[in-house]
Amino acid sequence: MATANDIPPSLSKVRHIVLVLSGKGGVGKSSITTQLALSLVQLGYSVGVLDIDLTGPSLPRMFGLESKKIHQSSQGWVPVYTDSSKRLCVMSIGFLLKDRGDSVVWRGPKKSAMIRQFVRDVVWGELDYLLIDTPPGTSDEHISIAEQLRDAHPDGAVLVTTPQAVATADVRKELSFCRKVGLDILGVVENMSGFICPHCAECSHIFSKGGGEDLAKQYDVPFLGAVPIDPRFVLLIEEQHATAASTVGEQKPDAIDGTGFSLIEKYKECKLCPIFARITEQVVALTKDKAR
Image (cartoon, rainbow, N blue to C red; front, side):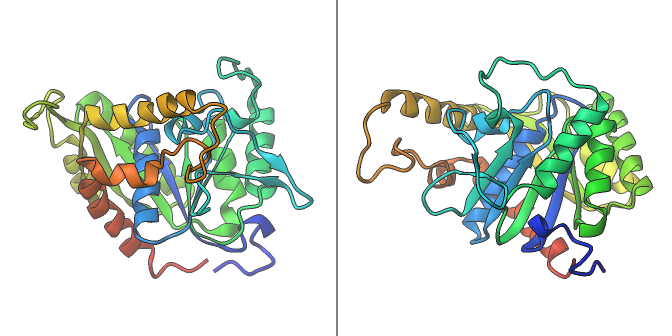
C-alpha cells in the first residue's frame, strides 16, 4: 500500500483510479469512459475524467465542453466541471488547443511530460473516482501513465473490445501489457455488441457477438457486460452542441452552464443507461475494498 508521502499530492484525495484501455482503435473507449462517468455520478459518486489521448482528444466533445478552457490557480490547473453541482469534471489537452482542428505533433518525451503534468499539476480535489481515457495501443502514453501512477496504486483497468476477432486479437496485447506493468484487470466490456433499431428497438448483431465474453473467459477475468450501438446516444451527445449554439449570449437563470442542458440528467432517458448501471455496479464492487 502506498503511503501518503508516495502518492502525488494532486491525487491524495482521490479514492479510486480506473483506466479505460484497449489495444484496438475505434472500439469506443471514450464512449465507454463517458457513460461510466455518468453512471457513477448517478450512483452518487464524485468523478473526474482525465483524457490522455493527446493526438485525438474527444472527451471535451463527448461532455459538451468544447468551448471551455481550463484555469490556472495557485495550486495548479483546475479541471472543467460539467455543471454547477461540480459532481463531474474533465481534463483534456483539447482544452489547451486554440482550435479543435489543431493537430498535436509531439514525440515521446513531450507526450510523457504532458501526462506527468496532467497527473501532478491538476487540482482534482476530493474525488471518489478518477477515470483515465487512453489512446489505443501500448506505447508512450501507456508507459508514461503507468509510471506516473505507480505510487498511487490505481485500482485497475477496464478493457474495451468489439465482438470481432480482429479487435479481440489486439485487446489481448493490452491485457498482456496490464500484466507486465502490474495493473489489475477489473474486467472486459464488449462494445458495439449489436445495433438497436431507433424505430422498433430490435437489436441486430451486425458485428457478431460474444467475442469479448470469450476473451474474458480465456484469460479468467470478469466479463462486465455487452453494450449495443444506440443511435440515440449519439444524438444525445450532438444535442448538447445544438443547444449550446442556440443559447450563445442568452444566460438563463435556471440554465446549466448557460445552455439549460444537463447530460447527466438527459442520459437517464437513454436505453444504454440501465446497461451501464449494471456495468458500473460491478466496477464499484470490484474497487470497493481496494485501498491506496
